[in-house]
Length: 395
Image (cartoon, rainbow, N blue to C red):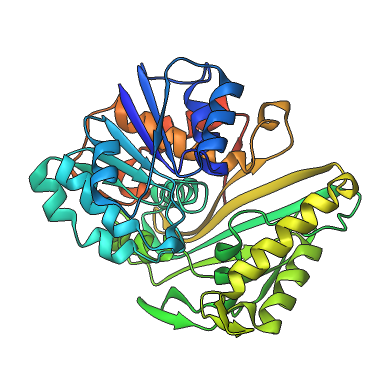
């Protein structure tokens, strides 16, 4: 099998490649096309992994001919190009034209509705696309499916993600993922599902404090833009159970949360709107990215060892056999040596899981969200192989 990974030298793409080349892989891969604009990063990753199946492809995603050549002949294309760069739909059209199956990591729901609207075209072409297949979205969607499958009738499903660090406080702000994504989560309106319909909610609204086990403790969650709430309440097997409420809420580590709130207060939430400095137009994102990267490099010796703990969970309320029932399904990711080479192993490993399950099974042409495409049991079995702890509770 030939797998093309667009943006493959980035942090998430590199993690996906690591997992595909590991002994956890359930498919036979002959070639991984590592496509990126950053040749030095590609070469460094190829040298580190030292696997002859890696083939380097210089990528200019804005050049349609280069993009098409990178995709052509692949069994699957994994799109790791940052969504907010704006190339999502061009890549989507390119894989449809090439009749190459597709998976991406999502991106705040920015293009989710537009992608789903292409379902009939993909189905007619015999092309399968599963969108939003990282950790959140992705694994989180499958968690919601696991909740829904245990209820006969659904009143609500509330989805949460919390991260916390254990160890000495970091004096340096290190973004957990793309800076533009974090700023968008804090500064932009979100679409939630309340009263049986989608509604627009203000940035950082819906604040809710939950008491979680250590090391998370008391966590304040908030609405943020994501794709799960755009798809889960409308999914087959969930919609017809009467769901009236679905929400997605986020909690970043306490001190980092304060830093991002401060940046939004300072105006960095409008990260793509240029400002003029000495007659030169520059975006706040470019400035912030440069400053944060410089600060990390200058202070690398001050960055302490910290253990990252994540909990992803959904709480569903409804009825089972006519009785009021609450179902909670959670996935906990605790420090383990298996994650050492990864940055955000949860997202990249789940991208790899999605690609492998698609290629190992029978493709279902069309455009799908994860909760409608993947079966819970085999998906959770892949999580367990990667030391993710899955638990389910019903009362």
